[in-house]
Image (tube, rainbow, N blue to C red; front, side):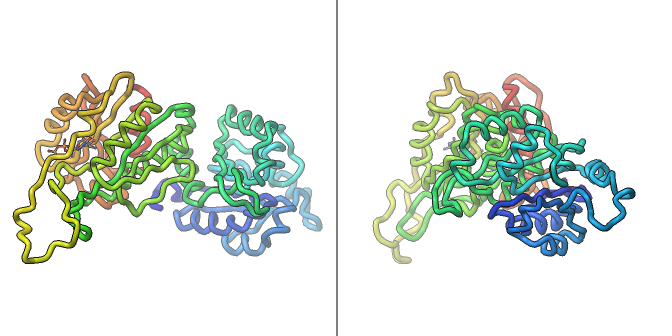
Length: 401
Ligand code: CTP
């Protein structure tokens, strides 16, 4: 992951007692790699799953477990929880048992971690993990909602096989998702897309010439995947129609894999009804071989005579009634006027322009420099930023359409 927002940030990592506690090691390493300083506070039951020494070595700091530090001079240390809480730019509790979730929701301060949480002034991210029946209990869901109302960022647990052998929601998400949630909070975003149904497309499409060769383009799909991730973290129900890609989508994203422009068109039409927004970030092929050869073409075949036909323009052909539709334009020349033409011709609500002339922008980069043009509005250009930051700007603009 690439992000500069963690550089120099002071983060308290709260670790609680569940089997996923070992993943705290990976969280600490990632945060430190991104330039953050990490101090760990464990609940006593977390120490049954992972040793404080491990987390202390990895975080390069002493680990706090007890509210009252035994033989030490408690008179001097009596306000340690306040001092530590005020030191932090962010408190992240991961994994957080549903027991600790409930304690935090009720304002308990019965151990070192809950005391720090109560004393904090910084934003907080909680990544709960539990067995499915514990996680899904209405009282726990109510506590999540209560904390969210107070501005605490709750990362929804993943669904899958659990340590108990049961299957369901309760798994601690991948580290990337936890880090992205922290990044989102540092960037100042909230769960403001809750209840929105957003359809995103990403990646190139591949148009087969024969069983071995295809026509494609250099799109990596990163921009579309980052939009899907950001929208999902901000609470939206996201469907991602993806062409061939090496990117990974979040567990919560409904992923539809396609290969060709025809497949993409079919699936966009199928999924659009259930969605209010379409963000068409895919680099759909404009041409396809008129007929794919059923066996491998040999050199003797005349490749220069492969007949191409135009693919259908998805944005131009869908029924946009009642939908807000965002397109992309990747240009090399006359960028602004070409993008404006596409906005009008394809009857879009907004278009996001990328120029291949901008350094660090376009294919394969983790960064992008975008210009946003809304229907009947002036163009607004943004500086070079990570594709995740750009994704969040696009989503905020979408809220104002
Ligand atoms: N698009 C689409 N269907 C296609 C081709 C493109 O829906 N068959 C969408 C893209 O996903 C993008 C927008 O149209 O959101 C603009 O794509 P772009 O390739 O920049 O423009 P084209 O219309 O293909 O024009 P050109 O390639 O000539 O610039």
